Image (cartoon, rainbow, N blue to C red; front, side, top):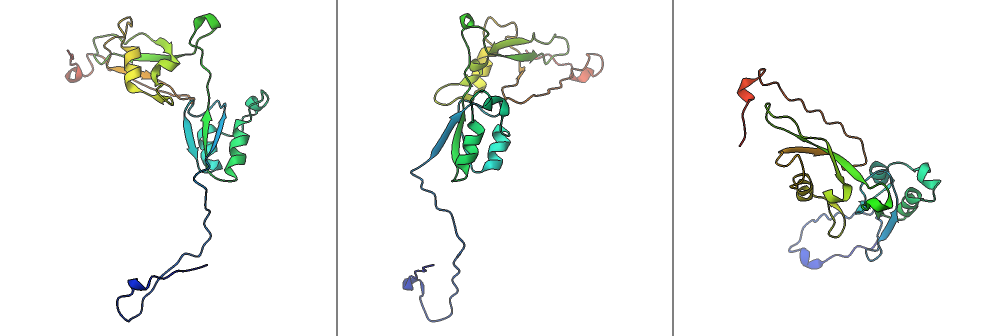
Length: 192
């Protein structure tokens, strides 16, 4: 290890203590960034994810998916191999069908709820999965896009203040209980 000293740091005579870390550090070439593109049934899709190590990859995209490997997609193995050298970016693509003439379209259900105990909850509906994302550049879940899809003029749930959907690839349980009007009269407020 080579240590260079700047003598201008020493203003007067005396004892000075300088500590230098002699442990080995890994130097990565920042001009080279690896990008792994493939398919995964878990994790975010259509946007890059920075992965530092295999535990990050398993946490985000799950373990090796033998179902996809039987169909020729070795996305997980490619990530693990590239992570042996250093961090990577990974993009899990998801082909979506938005055209009903090409077969089943990819939709996601959403539910609207009434905040008043005197009004009924909204009707469970389905909307195109792609309509809940901001697609400028890489896909991001977007609250204004979700509200625009749920609150469009043709929707029977227009004007609902509480709307719930699941855009992740993991199951979600959402338990909402509305009190009866007679149980808690102090909470029976109409919002106009």
